[in-house]
Length: 166
Image (tube, rainbow, N blue to C red):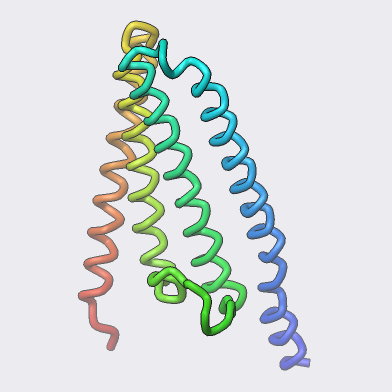
C-alpha cells in the first residue's frame, strides 16, 4: 500500500499539465493582442508623432517580454515539475531549456517582472500629460518593490548557494 501511495503521489504531477496548456493558450492570446496592436497602429503610422511611435514600440516590447516570461514558466515549470520535454535530436532547443532549476526560474521571473514593470513605467512617463500623478506615484512604488524583491531574492539564492549542507 505504501508503494501505491507513493506511485499515486508521483503520478499526480501530471495534474499540472493542464496548467501549462492554459499558459500556452495565454501565450496565443498575447500574440493576438500583439497582432491587434500592429494592425491598429500601422494605418496611422505616417501621421503619428514620435511620442506615439515610442508608445507603440514600448507596448510591443511589453507584450513580448510578457510572452518571454510565459514561455520560461511553461518550459522550466513543465520540465522541473512534470516531465522532461523531448523534442528530438534536430530540434532547436533554447540553451537554457532543461538547465533552469526552481531557484533559477525565480530569479528569471523576478527579472522579467522588473523589466515589464520598467517598460510599463516608461510608457506612463512618455504619456505624462494623460497620467494621474497619484497613479504614477503608486506605479513607482510598485516598481521599486519589485526591484527590491529581486535584489533580496538574488541575495537569498546567493546565500543559500554558499551554505554547505552538512
